[in-house]
Image (cartoon, rainbow, N blue to C red; front, side, top):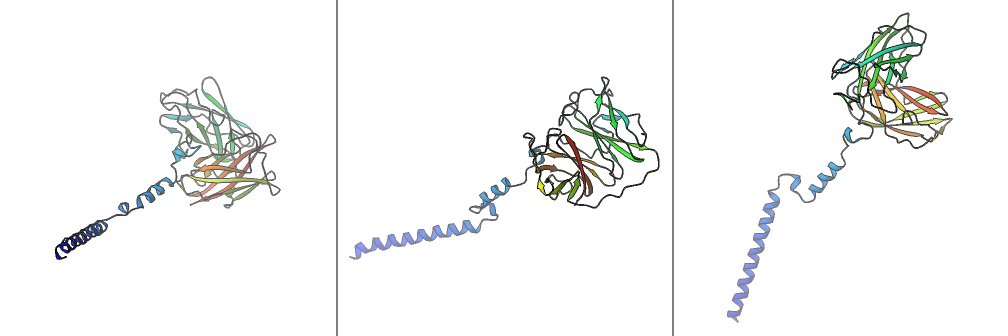
Amino acid sequence: MLTSARPIARRRALAAAGTAVVLTLALAACGSSTNSSSMPGMDHSAKASSASASPSTDDMPGMDHMAAGNGLTDNKDGYRLTSKNMALAAGKQTPYRFTVTGPDGKPVTTFAVDQTKRMHFYAIRSDLSGFQHIHPTMAADGTWNADLASLAPGSWRVFASFTPDSGAGKGTAFVLSRTVTVPGTGTETPLPAAARTAEVDGYTVTVNGEPMAGMAHPITVTITKDGKPVTGLEPYLDTYAHLTAFHQGDTAFAHLHPTTKVNGYHGGPELSFNAELPTSGNWRLFLQFQTAGTLHTAALTLNVG
């Protein structure tokens, strides 16, 4: 009996020693972990966090044609907005003639179509009143003609938004501007207080969202009439609404690109936009939309932090 018991006791002792070694190694491995990425399950958490991060503006629809900068210059990357019109008459329709020259100093005559037009032209008074959005015509020599409606006396800034379809800047969106004076005695219009809603032609426009300066951020515009959702918006410039913003103080320009796809003549009531406003402060927003063949322009002030 003693002879047979000794091997059994020896095997039990070896097994116990082996278990202790395994346990010691396991505890040492856990104790040597110095970051969460080596903890079981944490690698999956990190991947999930990365996947849920906000997309870059390059991935957001509608941002591929957004021009860089605030438009407060008449030249960029060799392209220049030129005009002999330093002053325009007040109180009547008046033409503004201009040319875009390229890096070679010659007038640019080939432009890509952006939202159904080759050139978008804007005029805004220094107090952010008197907004005009025009699609000028170009002569064969590259001279553009924008017929501006009646202008109030004061200082104005005009913007040309375009994309060359040839040359060094082909495919690049530009916004260039110049100032122009309208002689006469004028009164500055106080900027309306910041508000989320505006009324125009019986329609109520409501803006939802909290854009932050220097960051791409989605906003939603809702259009109602007599308290009822509007679902009959018509296509205008290949979208259901065109949204432009100007900054109080320096009239910096921003075009908020729509992301709602056009599908027939029944747009609304909600429309989405990518808002990328470069600086904080008050911005005057101008929303243009069309119903029954009539174009409406709603304006409201949005404070951006």
